[in-house]
Length: 248
Image (cartoon, rainbow, N blue to C red; front, side, top):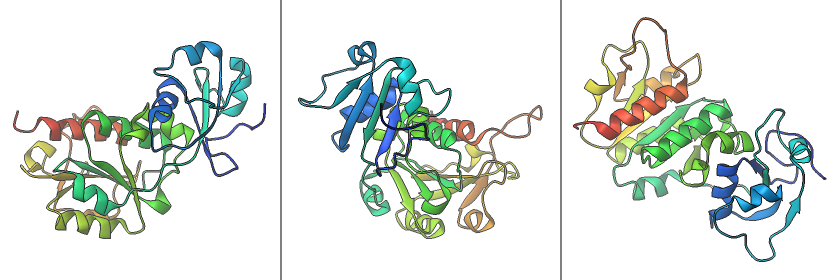
C-alpha cells in the first residue's frame, strides 16, 4: 500500500480522512472531489448509499490501513483521499445565515478541539465557524474524525484579519459576545434577542486583547469553583446550547 502515516494532509495536496462518520459524510458530499478509498470489506458494507460507478477502492486489512493514518487512530476500516473543500467567504455566510449563530475562534489551534466545535456547531444549527487562517489547523483527517461528519455540513471560513471579520459581522447585525472567565456578566444575561457571534479564545491564553476589544460584550459561563475553566470545545458546546434555548 502506498502512503505513509500522517495527520491527514497527503503530500499530493489532497486530504486524507478516516473513520465511518467522516468518510461517509465526505462521500455523500457533492462538493467533494474524491480520489481513492482504502477500506475493509466489512466497513464498505456498512456505508450508507452506494459508491459512484468506477470509484477507486483498494481493499485492505485493518492493520494495513493503520499505516495510512496517525498512530493509534480508530480508522474503523475506512481511509479516504480527497480534495480539500472549496473555501467559503464570510460575505457568503452573512448573506445566507438568516440569523443563525456564528462561532469565531481566536487562535484555537488544536485540531481535536476545532473538530469537536464543528460537531457542536452542526448540532445546534450554527451558520459557520470563522478562524484566522494563520492561527488555525488545516483541514485534515484529525479535524474530520473529531467533527464526526460535521466538516462536510458546517462552513469553515478562514480570514486574514479576524478583527475585520468581526466588524463585518457587526455591520450585518450580529452582537459579538466574547467568552472569558474574567467577565462579571454570565452568558445568559448577555444574550440579546437578535443574531449572535460567539467568540472563543485559544486554549489556555484566551482571546487576544484586540479581539476582546472587538466584542460588544464579554461573558462567562456560570461554572462552579471546583474547576477553574472548561476545555474550549466544551465551552463552545454549552454556549451554543444557551443560544439555541434562549427565551425557552
